[in-house]
Image 1 (tube, each protein chain N blue to C red):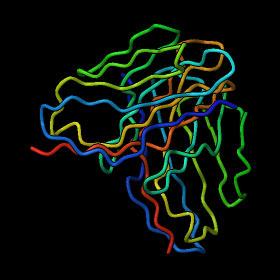
Image 2: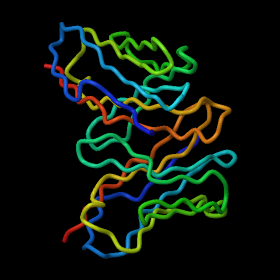
Image 3: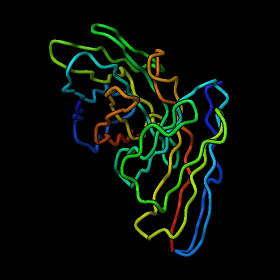
Length: 111
Length: 115
């Protein structure tokens, strides 16, 4: 099956810093890719998605580009805010209605 | 409307109790999911319903019993749980396989504590 590897956290940044959270996948074929965010005490929210190579997903200032050649889907944001503090999960569609998740990266933004 | 609702938000139950978790969506999705999430871990798939029929059971113990009364509702019946079943239980929904896009939309979860 497919697998997803995320950079290990926790990640701590200052407000307005540049953010990158790395995500790579292994898969047969080209799965749809997703970033989900989980704020403290809440469920997962879909942050952005990409369904084919070279697609760029974007939302709320976050971006990720589906890179077939490097099998990556890194999450980036140019200027983070305290409110971005959360756990971020990279996920890949595994087919048969299953998602495979990375282990999650806890992000803390200090004012 | 991309909302999935779950009730209750919190639940404390003893090992001999019977309780149910409820999930509802009105996005017209025909696939619904139950996940279990332990602290600092990603969600683990438990069950998938597609067109109100159980399509995936990830070898979940029988003390968890899912039910899909109609296309908008999903229940998880709990009986004789163990303390290690304490976790956040997440419901999700999506379009069915074959219809794209089929990203999953999650509810806020039910925080379950088994005493």
